[in-house]
Image 1 (cartoon, rainbow, N blue to C red):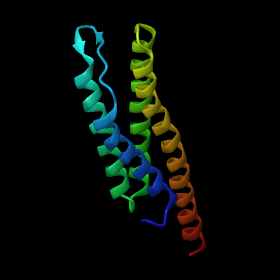
Image 2: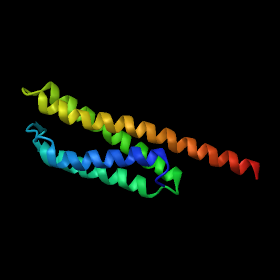
Image 3: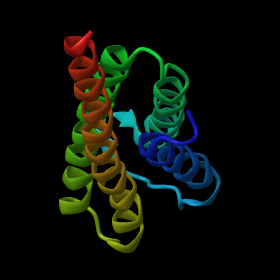
Image 4: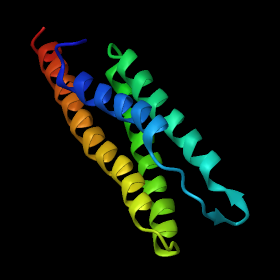
Length: 130
């Protein structure tokens, strides 16, 4: 598990999410009368738990790929919400800090999915030789 590069990528996503839970500045904006800071904290918890879940099911690569795709779509949705808030906000600095988190997660998820797919292809090619 540790020797695989996708483990490092998923662990980086989880650690950045946990660190950002405590250190990112709060955002104060409303979308359809929903309080967004509560949604943002839930998003951070969901991101770190999906990364840990994907990290722990390393033996089932197909399920790991499905979780990574679900996680990627969550990051895309959050990027859209943050871009909406960015265009309607007065203060840009805190939104840019928040926007870095889903963008780096998307890059790391793409890299980990490619590595997982590469492992899956290797296993399938070995099975063909048997």
